[in-house]
Image 1 (cartoon, rainbow, N blue to C red):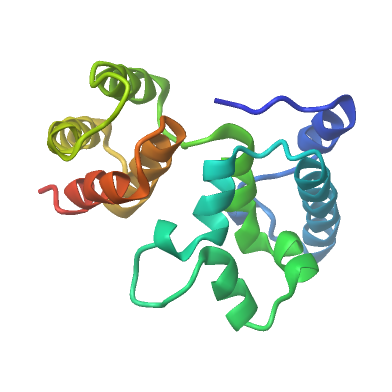
Image 2 (cartoon, rainbow, N blue to C red):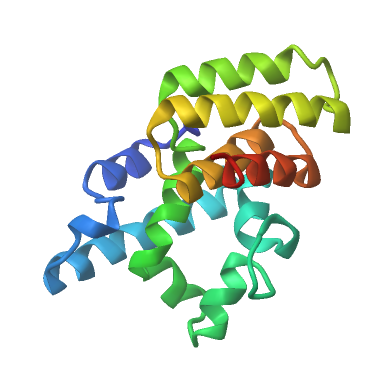
Length: 178
């Protein structure tokens, strides 16, 4: 579910390394961080990032964990302002989500998307129970790391119109999977 990019944004993306583990050299990090900042600013200026993806980063209700606040609040708590945040190596995973949506294999995305479509126009708490079971099954078949998969199912759910609270239930089902 990639967002539409301008030609310049496409150029930046082609020169950007979104996998933070591959940006190890300081000069590479500096170059990469400037590209990430330029791309992020352009996307935000154009309002190209879907609302639910921005909420994932900015809204405390879209975040789990012991620390209170949004994902952006965590950066701020660590002394980073907006400019420093969008240049930080740990921001790359958020930029990746802004651009492409959930980072799950296509067969999982297709199967789970169809399950949500089958719920009809609105996902109820009863539907969320069934979707949680579906997500757990898909996770078990995937071989993905549990915490990572849970967060990606949450992202996919909100991208597909599921409320944050129901998406949290789906996320928790994957976390609790054995």
